[in-house]
Length: 190
Image (cartoon, rainbow, N blue to C red; front, side, top):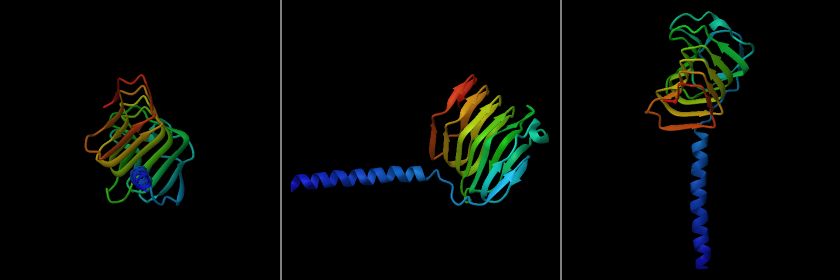
């Protein structure tokens, strides 16, 4: 009987600990992104939804100095590049995909996209949750830049030929940078 109580106590502690781990993983999910929309050029995303890039955007899509090609201004957004590329012109302070949302509006996920020849390939300047997965960031000053977010998950990305591969600030409460491939960056993570 005493052994059964110990076993039950150990199982209960394991179950609570394991369910806590699962809770941490769910923090990186983006809620309700059912509305699917397609995009073909530089644009602003101002409403929640699932946005899919249907073609490459070349030469920065005409992006000027200190401008962004795709601006995400809403939370609960998934931007799926479908394997396409958004290439810049190497102009000063340009950004391939820039996210600035209210921290109250939810997270943003960027996936399956290549970003080349930008000052910032992907830049999160403010969001609750920042997820960057299966992105190739190459030949940028900053491949992926994340600041002023609560949670950030940067996984399964290819980061190459950038001045700084990944830049994150110290204020992030939960940060997961894992399973990324790095090559020929002057600094991998800053």
